[in-house]
Length: 351
Image (cartoon, rainbow, N blue to C red; front, side, top):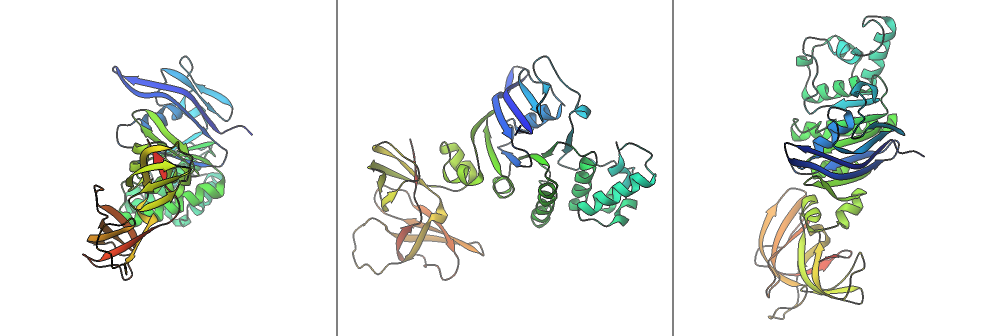
């Protein structure tokens, strides 16, 4: 089966500043891919090249098996069968919601066929048909984003492009809107490319996550793969909090200040750095009477209550810096308490 989007060797430079440097990416039909990275890493430029708003210096963009961009070819945006939703929705303020959605549809805006299509699209994004008569300023931020999505879906695009579509919304509204939008796209089977700087957003909605740094992808895979088995330390730290421990690898396990820990991926014998996620560690009050430092035993230096979770800062002795443990907040150990630290799952060695 042909991928809906195939990007090969894409490069782009602005005023002698390389923004994209040989980017490769493929999107399977009906999938959601999130490109995540810090501001200025090149992710929005990638989206603009796919949309046709910019032309690449080299490389190619194919949509549904059709070449739409190369160094000497650039198909116009409106001929690419692409839907585009910007960060602020970009609705026309002088038009009604219905006219916004109908914009670009064939036929007269007030025809029965167009009105029926608008009502159908409003229903698709969980809005009442009566919203068609409202103006954009009469809608909440989340409703505006859903109208923008309905407008983008009106012409049944092959590929949907979402450029930081939820970042302007407050936390609660962002989560609800994100869930509603991704459900619409998934139910409709629309292949989607989402650009975001929000790691949690990328991991929660995407089938595939691509982490970008300085115009290149450091890691591409499923959310579980990129989070649990990142390609390097940058990717590991960008996607979430980490616990790094000096270790010695021997025969598929790592000897650390927390004891011997299994590995999630093969690693050569010798010294290295073991990465764990804070939620892999569990601290329980120790009953060990020993006073000296022992593997897997530490002292709680501080606690941070986060509602559902609590963050514990724990000194495990020796030359190892204090580590962070994230666990449920029901009856956590107090400050100065001696604790046993157990490890869930294995770790990843980074060298």
